[in-house]
Length: 343
Image (tube, rainbow, N blue to C red; front, top):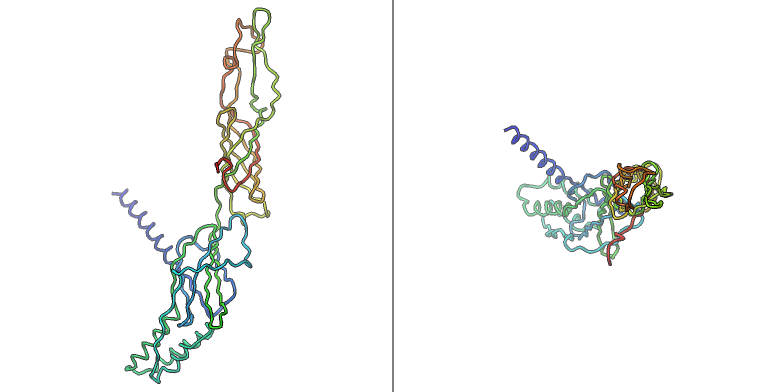
């Protein structure tokens, strides 16, 4: 019973969270800020319902949305995305019927002929005053006024907000003279880090657990276990890196972003694993420092350097292979597509 209650409570919390996210509403006042770019920051991911008010009742408005990914490069606000016509986002409020009653004719006529969004608030105030003074039998005029008031507000489709994306809402109206009026709202989502894939070379310093190499050197009729000269201080491994980077806006040094990395490489057809810290420069080049677990060979326990044996032994017979850890550093590069992907 307790488990069922806990599961039910968690499902209730999930439902409430989803419901709360779906009820986000943003209202754009068309009577203000024409030609400016309004910026709303730290918008939670999910859906936002967009509501326009103080719009001209008999005018058509085009509402369009553009997304721009911001975690890599900053966006120049002076470059406004081109508007592509999306008929599904185009709405035209219903035309207002002609008012013939003197009690509301002035307010209704003025609202039906308004040509600037900035005039709508004052006309709405006059219409509300006229409605208060209207007699109860003025049903046609009241219906006209209410329709005009309703037509000054409208709600578009909901828009999805995603982390690390800026979503631009562009509202446009073409005037009778052919001029374009535009309102732009920029929704800045929450900034969070992300995983990336980079490619490069990992260099392992072999001095911590030095790779051993021995051979059986013949002397007359016997053989001596002899250590070979091994000057390989570094071994390099082609590696694929998986990098976690915080949002670069949270870092204090422009162009440099620290992070955490883990990678998988190949050495002599054997897998190797590396992990450590990475410093990414301009989102394209990374320098890492950490440790690598890779396969090393060592002289088998039954043999020792200088030991006399009766027969020649191969490299595999003299050595055993085991995984050891060594300090390492890497150079990694970020590409638009995988370098291993065929055309």
